[in-house]
Amino acid sequence: MDITIKITDRKGKTHEIQVPTDMALNLMQVVRAYELEPIGTVGVCGGMAMCSTCQCYILNEVSLPEKKELEDTTLSRLQHSKPNSRLSCQVVVTKEMEGLEMELAPMM
Image (cartoon, rainbow, N blue to C red; front, side):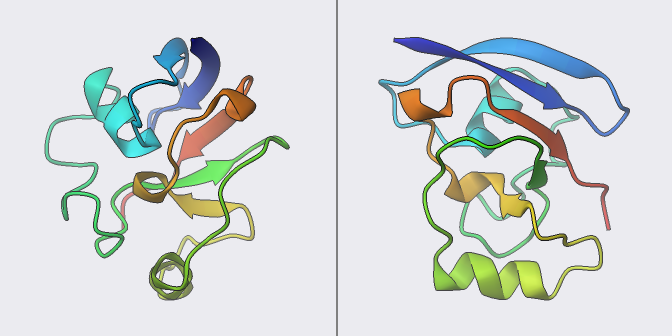
């Protein structure tokens, strides 16, 4: 099953895309797969919740997995962190995320 999500890139352009829910993809992998940002600018640490290059802002209310301690710790060190910040590498796509709207945070 595919869901529709909207991702606003760092240039302010919003992309409405279809994302499969049966592949255990995280949002960082989705951004990379759809080439929404230049190669090497998102997920530099490979999805280990350490580099913050995949930080995003969740713009609407959808069901997301809880933040784990490592994600919270990384977010707490960031200049552009907000209450709705997440590390996209830590958010696995599920069917409950239908209609998600997110924006990639500025680079540090």
